[in-house]
Amino acid sequence: MINLLKKVQVVALALAAAAAFAFNMPEQGTLKGQVSEGVWVDLSPNDLYECNPDATICTARFNDQGEMISQVSGQFIQL
Image (tube, rainbow, N blue to C red; front, side, top):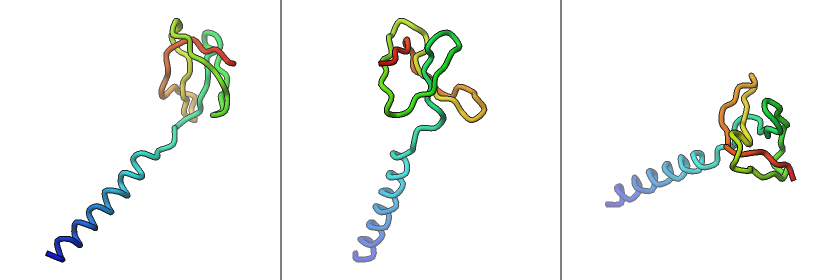
């Protein structure tokens, strides 16, 4: 019985470590806002902006090669 309890503790520790890495992944790529068609500005995490839902793309993340890897729909409005 004691041997089983030790194994359960090891499994629980392994699952906790895996969950810690799984839920703490930083955002990948450079965040940019589209001010007009094809014109993007870099955004920092402290920049304030809104996304008006009328437009097609508000913000997007780009990889090091300049390729879009994710996007948020809407019109970008910097505050």
